[in-house]
Amino acid sequence: MAKKIRRTAQTATGAGSAGPTAAAAPKRRRGGRVPAQLVTDFTVQLSTLSEAGIPVVKALTILEGQTRPGPFKDVLAEVTEDVAGGLPLSEAMGKHPRCFDSLFSSMVRAGEAGGVLDRVLRRLADFREKAAAIKSTVRGALIYPSVILVVALGVVSAVIVFVIPKFQEIFRSFNVSLPPITQILLDVSDFVVSYWYLVFGLPVLLFMMHGAAMRKGGGYRYGVHRLLLKLPIMGNVLSTALIAAFSRTFGTLVQAGVPHLEALEIVRDTTGNEVLKGAVEDIRRTVREGEGLARPMGESGVFDDMVVNMVDVGEETGELDNMLIKVADAYETQVDRKIDAMFKLIEPLMLVVIAVLVGFIVVALFMPLLTIMSTLGGT
Image (cartoon, rainbow, N blue to C red):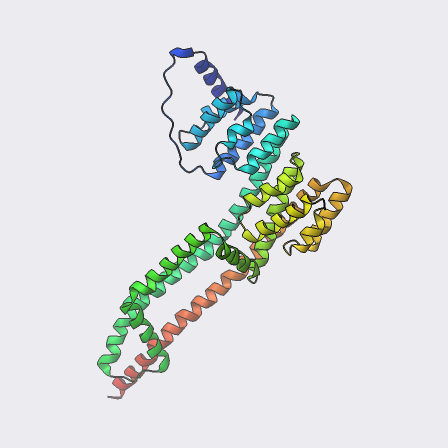
């Protein structure tokens, strides 16, 4: 990577010496999605260059030069121009909240104020890498059961729509009396075939309505998030993940020198869970009145005794940031372990449910067939 950076630096220097005769830069595009991993990689590289003593403007020029054309390259070009024009890096990044959120720009601002930008960038890079690792673990664990569920639903739907009506014609042609289990299956098939637009369209409509309500926020979003935290097994995993994310974010901000009230405000605005957001706002309000963190955290109902005690000790010893990072490390390990255990339990349960469903269909269809075969054999 060092060779690539040196080559890009030489290219950037050569381009800079071209002066006003250089070709005009193409018009930059606006908007477009920027992958979070791209921002994380940029943060790691910028921290490496800063630790090597390379000035911020030159480091930004190098990284902008080696970034592929796209929305993020355009953002880096604008940030580089702003910083070269005298604007602080935090303010230049703050103009692009879709790439650099309030947590990012606040930590950079704290690093600039304390003259420790390289260290803050390293902490920020570590933070983003750990957060990305947790998301990757969760998504990876979800892939296998999701594929099984989708395939199973597709196969069962195809059987109900295309196969069972054929059996129904056979049963009618032989005028055989159907057992209750078979009649239930045939009734379900008739309903799905007759009202397919409701069976397949209603879930899609409900999903879209749910997504719109969740984006709108308010009581519905809060209720869904609260319900998720109360679910068996999964609720415990989500609660542990929220505590880990809070501790990691808050601890990283405090470690970077961001004041507690501002750090709590950033945590509140960057969390995606309404229950945690409300709890953090209550904590922030109490801290603003002059109290410590431990008591309001304990009263929130979100944080368990271990976290509250660690925070209490951290406040008393002046090691709050280190205590929060230790809590984050411990709870992230718990999240990995609980996710692994949860999906080890979910996978066999899904297989059992699918087996029961398939067995129900097979028994319901073959019971009348056995009657027909015995009738034909008797004649």
